[in-house]
Image (cartoon, rainbow, N blue to C red):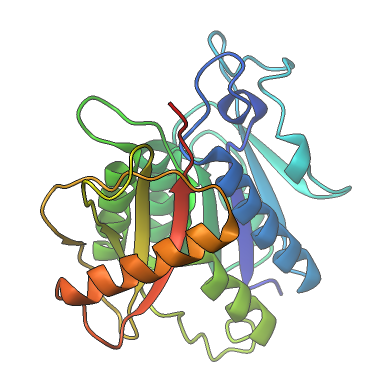
Length: 272
């Protein structure tokens, strides 16, 4: 009996390579996180299921290069690919039947887009009574209107957590798979994480930063500070390490609990 499966949603070349449209926010980081999850799932014999969106026109037209799953995370022989046309991977596909046939009780979700296919697939799974683990730092989107991609991701994580999903980090999922906590029947959930966007201005000259704080207890709310902007250019590992330290001090001085585990999740390297 398989108790858990990893869903890799719409990680298709056209959304990630920047050729036809701007690449999705932190696309390279997203690919790295997805590969980490896929490798961990394969090591622990957790099924990896790829979800691939089909469209009659636009970016993801079937059999085009843009439609293909990104080669850096290509499916292995025998891994299932679910082709879909709707936002949810369950709608109009055999995903639900496939999971039921394998007696799968829970899914791990990563991919894109945060507010569409990732959210709707997760909500459908919750409505089916499944355990849903959303990799909060393992899905992404594009900025839309006045909302930045970081803000959309954070809002979706909060909404999913409020509706019963476990929103956890990629590293927490890898640890869960390694320890076989879920598969052993203990089903201890990884610690919930709170997603935080801290903006500070006048520190550096170009770029932007979004990062996450991981708390020791299950917190499902967004903590935010005044809208300032942190700008920075990162030229080497030493500078990045120094910035990490500054941000940790800033976060703690801004009211974040002293026992919070602070994890820098992403740096946008923007050179103007």
